Length: 172
Image (cartoon, rainbow, N blue to C red; front, side):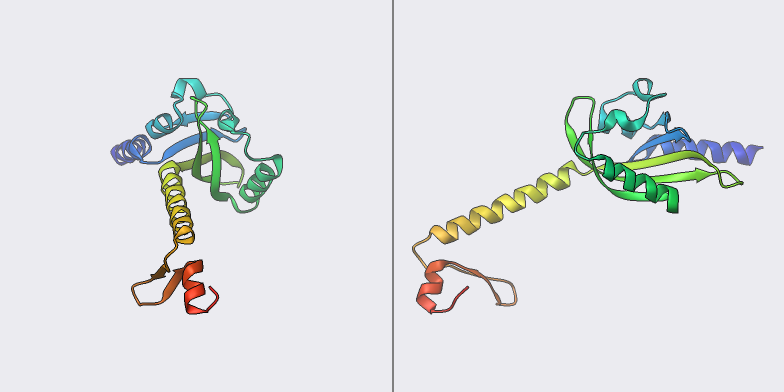
């Protein structure tokens, strides 16, 4: 009995203090529990979502075919993982990496679903900033009246502008 109590406390601690958002639903998909990180990411308190369907987070960015394929995968393999855009309580739409796993009883019947997700907003912002920076660099190079040649650490040419092309007589 003492070992079971220890394991329950450990499981509760992992759930409560995980760095990922966690949602547990019943077989009918109504939310039974969410962890602290779920609330931090979505802005919804446990009281606001328990008993509701996770569709409360739907951003409208994905069509029915996306969700159909997701649930077909969960039904076939018991698992689905991928990027999804969800809507927070504030209305902000954020990218997430979501993993859904079906929990089955001894007879193989689904009893619960566990969804674990991480907010990808910072990563997406960094990627966008990099794309914007690369675009600015390309526009600056192309606008330059001087020959500009970019090289990597091994000395391979990675970019050059129209003036370098004209001066060297080689196409990009």
